[in-house]
Length: 134
Image (cartoon, rainbow, N blue to C red; front, side):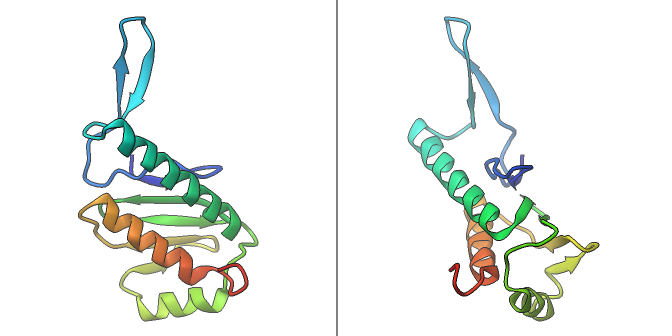
């Protein structure tokens, strides 16, 4: 719920949306579903999450959480990001980004919809990538 990357990275983002639910089948099996999404949307969401997982792993991000009010990034002890880009990002947007310890970056920004959060994360990860990894 609200996480983009978790642990080894990746759980779907759900901003301003209800929790995921289980769908029961007549044969007794269960299927994890997100209310309001059809199977094609769920498949697209899965690919988005897997792409995000790979990006996070490449950049040395151990955890990325985002919800309607903001979130946090937990970096590995030696992330593979452009440190100057991170410093500039924080300096230019000190109302959005704050460090919380050595490895945690807090994000203070409201998101109306999950696609807004996804666009924000995509832009942020693009700006943090090392020039040769972009």
